[in-house]
Length: 317
Length: 265
Image (cartoon, rainbow over all chains, first blue to last red; front, side, top):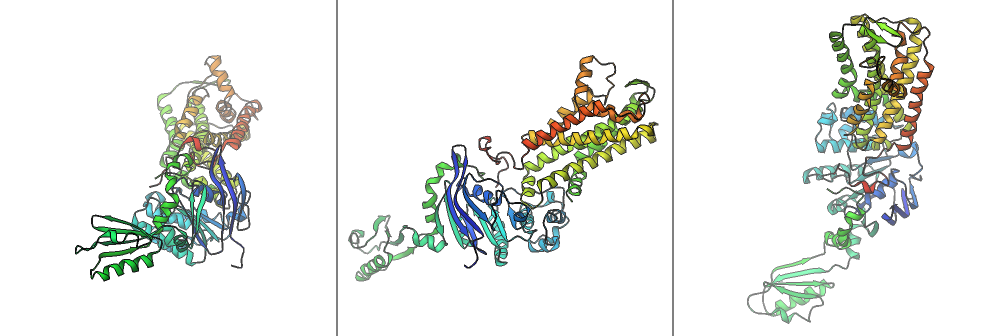
């Protein structure tokens, strides 16, 4: 990447009294990149993003967004960012079109309300009052408002929290459309699937720190989670004990199902197949499962559950 | 644009429009039906009660349009995250705040003019042109003061849900000692003193000069205006120190206030 990073964060700390909501976070986001900050409630995601938006002041560390320090930057900085906050407050008394016009008037080069309504699929709701929009429509208007200034950088703070699966998919398609337009996007989410679907790169946060970083594939590769080989023990003889000591992994038999957890799946699978072939038996339900990103995520953030209340600057569902 | 936006929000909020515009008018009509006797005003006795009530209720309407309306509006908009949304746009905070205040002042002008027109047309309220400049100045100083107090109110209430009750709890009792609903000319001296040091009665009296036959032109009440303006400055100081754009519960350093009720999901 030739151009300098859009977001540069080094050793960011945010304390509330004794409590460190963000505890030494460093990362960069390049131009056109979509980065997801993934973590449970209270991990410090929103605090981090709100510092980058200029809504909160950092306690320590350095932050640069589009070349600005968001803590002191003014109109010029805000004209180039778009924000979808966790709360979707919009003046209920305005119509969707009026809201886009009045918020657009705050920007030097606003996009046309009609174009934005088309983009987010609200053209037929243009003259409805905000109070009469459904939750999903409100979220779409919210996104349109974030785009009204034609921003270079978009912040999406838990854009689909509280959505039903259909609305979530719709919203993902919309975000994908934006990323197709080349916008740089930083999004927070506690849905793994969302990060996997939308993001080029994932930062996993736990208790104020980044505990893992990379593409979903890199996270998988870096994990020490084991591959699972399982099959049903043939009824016609053969004992699971015969496999013990032969395979590298950990063998367990339960209700006639054998599970082998192994760091060397290829060799162990060959061993198991050879063992079965030598006895002329077929292994029913033979399955090899790669560790899923979910397993890795849970491993990374698993211990964080107990910390939620203490670190909880974010809202629990 | 901000002013127009806030105006639009006001006129489309039925309850705000009712309390600011209709309530004082209804009061005037009711008082016109109930009272048919002489009334003691500052300096003498008038035989048309509307000569007293129309300007005093016009001031009350102006105070509602600024203090109550701005106080409720800003605090509910803060609760809803609307202020935070605006804070994320390039608009200067002062421009946003200015829009909210000018909107309140504009609604005060409309409410005030409506009341006086109704008074003049239906209740034979008379105006002394020589003292109109003094009334206009009092209107500007008074409405600006109550606008500043409205911003201060929104800075002091924790939630927009409390704002209407807080605004009425301040304004209504104050109105009773401030020559709005009843003349305090014969009230105990303590009641008079309380009225004199609060901002509403000086606003009512200094605005009412153009309607009070016992005040000589030009009628500028500088001492009363000074009391009003002092409250305006106090309101502005409180507002500038305490006003926040963040909803309660998520603002900086407010972690101990607990989680936001505005939960997602």
